[in-house]
Length: 485
Image 1: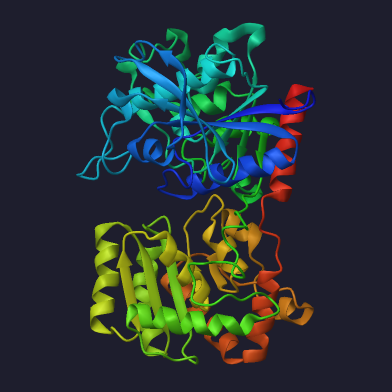
Image 2: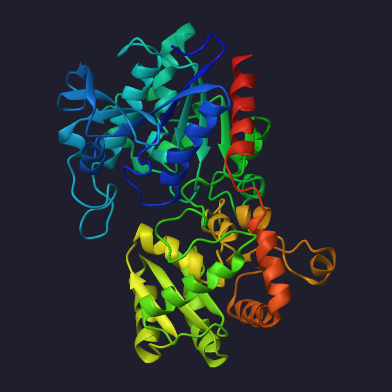
């Protein structure tokens, strides 16, 4: 049993690494609870029982049955991951027995019944948190993104038994919008459909519900917390967020530094660390060989590990590839997304196969090799709540080339003249994201790379940054304690 002073925290999320992952949310949910437990919490995670989750949780045990959950019976399972995560899994085949992407059908469009699926997750979270389903209850419910956005609203009826609620916005662009005709279907109070409630342009907004009904709202970097309170960055919710800025925090993400550790990483060609940075050259050679590029220590090797979307600025980068190639650089791309952007990188790889390599899709092991073998990574996002790839990149001595937005601005120090004089640079920062600024940043990176001694200093600067969850976990615990007090 946890000590009396331990805070019981329930995470509610739609994905969690290593069980199911479509993006950075899974990495956060898979790592932050372990750091919170170290900081004095008893953290459990409620996940939907998608096939991949059930398959990975082989030793799960039944906790309780849940009859008639939005059209079918369900079972609440308990399990532990090999990393020590404590899980509740909502096994509801009529909702979660889906092939492929958990949010989209085979045609790439959102599944029509997503509102029912994730309302069920939130409703069960509310019952679980208040001790209605097991003998465990939560002091704090921490819901993540729109998929868990109704949790705090469902908890409104719990009265004095209601735990405190925290809602984290990982990306304001995804709001979970559904027709108002579904209000009764989701068992939501009629009076919640108002401008002061979950109504957004005559639709139900799961994300707005999370903002309105939670005791505290966080997002994943201080700069993004400021940006989303503006008219441009707020995506229609800027005024609402400004009105709640005394209950809004920006807390930087971290990464699992046990998984992302070049000294022990089994997925890369050769181990290395800050004191043995020469081992990175073996990974560069292995990466060039993997993609069929010309093997050269002297050619700057750039990379992309990302969703290939306009938000990520990768339509801009696709136009800059000829400039990279024309100046002797190489680039490898790992990701998927907009078909036009995918095709642009595929075409570039076909035109100059010894300088451009493209893998459409995602492969976790390959992502590690790309981080270990590349010299620099492009993240020219038009907006970016936090970003995790730049944190992984710095851990592996791969210098980030980033736009000055959101968490990218908060985590990367531009290697400009002032920073070089004080030895503080950790990457290359551009603003705003455009073809011209990307070309200029590429040229600046190539000049820095040509000075081997300076480049190694920048790599070591990047590698010494604390990108772990230790400090962010401390800040989350402070939020929980503030609410509980």
